[in-house]
Image (cartoon, rainbow, N blue to C red; front, side, top):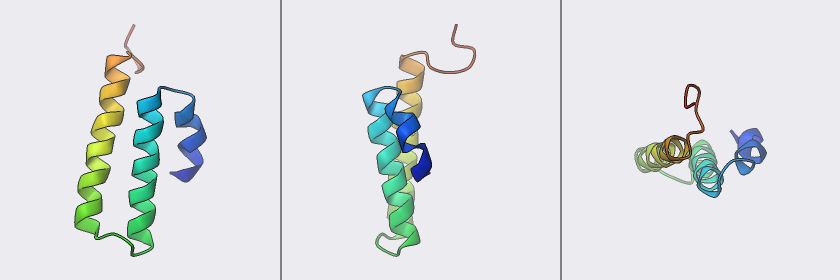
Length: 64
């Protein structure tokens, strides 16, 4: 997840922000800094945000 942060920065600003938040919450759960139930909701919200940005900008396979 962390290794893909530079890749997400090459897309749109919301992609980058979403991916950084996803990475944060995944790392926080792994380190015991966040409850898994709370982090899972945040992760899913940011996946939704990432996907919406991809759809809105037509950055997905088959968009053209």
